[in-house]
Image: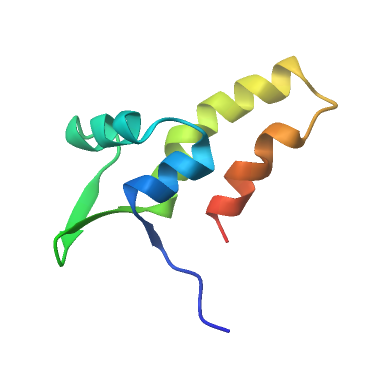
Length: 79
């Protein structure tokens, strides 16, 4: 088995977070998500995605203390 990748492409971030690809690209363009360009592909560190989502996930956990479903995509990012 290979080691987990530390970077994600915009389409992967969109799929994991449930937002549009256009939104992810806007986050990258306005530096909300810092990225690097490698071989013509923009990559974002998983840690940056987790930091972006953390405040929203904390808010959800305050509203829905018994529901853990909203964290499934977030948990996947770290793997």
